[in-house]
Image: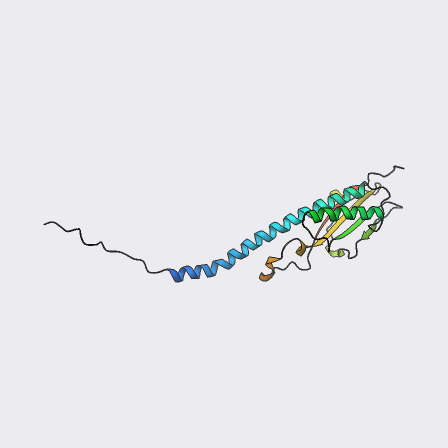
Length: 183
């Protein structure tokens, strides 16, 4: 006896998983969004920090090569400040809240500090690395650049409780004064 193959085979269907998929999405989506925002925020902050380091290097080098170095209010200090601001503006960083401190041991010895209008708070100043501690018998300049962290990043994690408001990003650079002993 021949069997007929005209009958349709039995279909095995799985129960609908829509509710489970939606529940998994509800649980994992906020974690994924938070992770992506954290990666973007950290990347932007690191990029801004690199720009601040370069601006500090440019300013310290200009200060080390400036004859008659005074404070930031002097003509030479204004030129140094202009170089720093120009670099930061070209990097896309706002210069409205930038704080620059210039330390040197020229003109009678001692460390003279010439801060901008709002100096960086002393407790948050970065410690001087041992390699940058200037020798007492040499002339040096040290430039400290401070900028609020929210000027570097869009502060996207504030909605999740990781707010950058009030935090400062700073960098310091020490150079030997190149014109010491020249007339």
